[in-house]
Amino acid sequence: MGSPTILDTILARRERDVAEAKAAVPPSELEARLAEAPPAIDFIARLRRDAPIAVIAEVKRASPSKGDIAPGMDAAAQALRYARGGASAISVLTEPTWFKGTLADMAAVRAAVEELGPDRPAILRKDFIIDDYQLLEARVHGADAVLLIVAALDDARLRHLYAAAVRLGMQALVEVNNADEMSRAAELGAALVGINNRDLRSFRVDLATTDRLASLAPPGATLAALSGISSRADVERFAAVGAAAVLVGESLMVAPDPAAKIRELRGVPAAAPGAAP
Ligand SMILES: O=C(O)c1ccccc1NCC(=O)[C@H](O)[C@H](O)COP(=O)(O)O
Image (tube, rainbow, N blue to C red; front, side, top):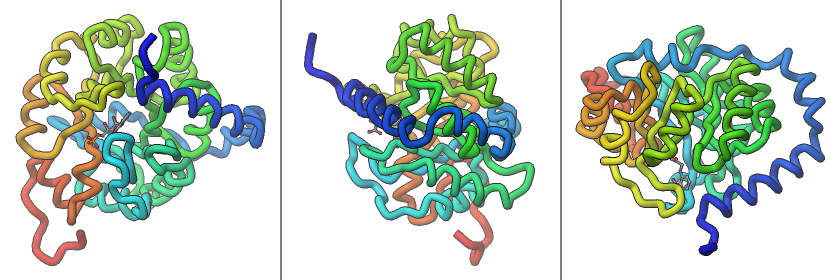
């Protein structure tokens, strides 16, 4: 066996984190809080509503590959900038050690977008989900959808977590990075598939990953392209191979005007001068 990859290291740490969280707040306590959780909307329908291309805008303070990106960023304020630009969904990284995110960030984002009414952006919990407990946490803190990374889960666990997410009223963005993972997502019957251009084991970003894998997506699935996206040309490239959405993190986090950057990615004209960023 070779040395552990960053994905292995993150997953091992997440297992310990989940055990500690369960010791502090037992699953039964979270289950009891489900009834008061903010209601979920249909994540896929929210993306589809913004055809031909929806932007899933990510709150990402740091990452294993880049280190600090915007460590002091206020998640809720950034989410409102994204909403102003027309983001269809907000992805909130809730992993604390490498991404400097928290569940409290996601709850704050959810509360902030609630003010926008029924057309609010949908909320994705972006994390390394390995346990039902994290699904309960996600729903209680206002997620409409969760990320399930095929490379992080065996088939039985993937199937179990996918069904459990749906039972809780959420949808799952099923992430793949190669043809084998895509066939596992198809086997699962994933309704929403994210092709990650970043190989989570090597950090290598290759935009051609989406081009190569898009035609292997299960028929009828909604397709999203993830990672390394920074220009309108990237978005057009992925729309041309059938992506209904793009997920964008770093280039929005470093943009001086994130709302304008989202408009640029969506291909809509710039806002009138003097409009709030
Ligand atoms: O971003 C990383 O360095 C990373 C490393 C290991 C596992 C996951 C990682 N990122 C998660 C993501 O896939 C991205 O946050 C997301 O797709 C946005 O990517 P980008 O637009 O390139 O910031």
